[in-house]
Amino acid sequence: MGPRGAISRIGALTAVAALLACAEAIDTSKRGEGADASPAGVPPSSGFTPPPTLDAAAFPTEPPAGAPDARVAPSGMPGTCTPGLCLQCDAQGRGLVPADDPACPALDCAALDTYTLSAEGDLSVCTRQVHLQTGRRCLGPGQCKMAPDPSSCADLRPVEQARTSSVCEVITGCEGGTEGTVGPAADGEPCGDAGVCRPNGMCDTTLAERCPGYDGAQICDAGVHVTGEHYCDVAAADTTCLAACQVYGRPCLAAFAAAPEAPCRQGDALGCLTAGPSLRCRCQNR
Image 1 (cartoon, rainbow, N blue to C red):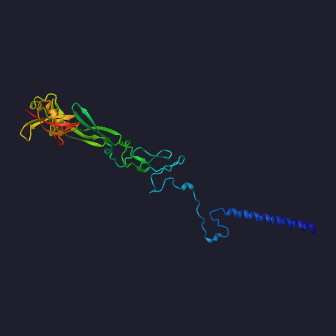
Image 2: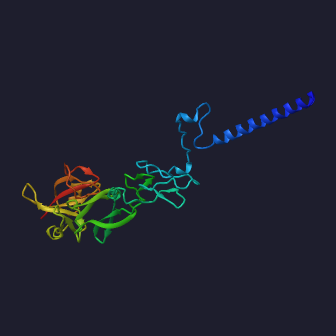
Image 3: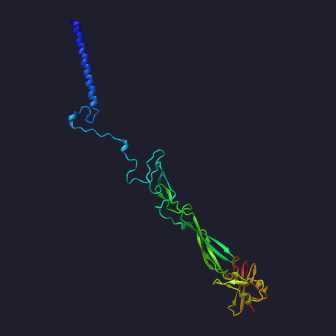
């Protein structure tokens, strides 16, 4: 073989050796992909154990125990809602706040009750509008209402709270949130046929008989004056008691201040010659 042929043979052997080295490298790379593969620089005999592969499907979609219940899942993210107080979950895992939850505490709806005064003939009636709980106690996810409101106490029931039993009784209060109270009408308040109300709440209709000659007058009372004389008290306005008694041909024994809304009220003592817008005049009763 000549020199040129020898050179060609050496070149071919060199190329073959290069190809074998490349194939071995590739095979070694493939072996490194197995479970026994070690990081670069760590021999397989060192006992190194590679970490396990993390699988996202292994993570739970439900929140861990003890996590807050009031979680609302964003749209398009099913499986992230956990039912709880005032929180329900739909089929897509989205949180919904119900109107009511039986776990919410009861509300004191009586705080919203109101009172209304009305008339039935000569009598007065105080009616209480009772508010009853109708649910709707959820304020938001995980939250209950702590104070009553019209939406959670919407069931109204009218209940009679007070009633007068005679024309000489009145009801005070019975407006807004104030309950009504029954009591006697003002002493001397007109009632019946020429009668007046007494402090016991009864109508005295005997005054017209006990005070003859006072036709047309509002008689407030009849009795015996400190001087021993019998008297009849009459209501007068914008005059003096002297003039008021003279209308019925009687002398004036005493005079008292009254009020337009209560003309028979016995106020401060006045003189018979004292003029006033509202007076109670004590005239002699023959």
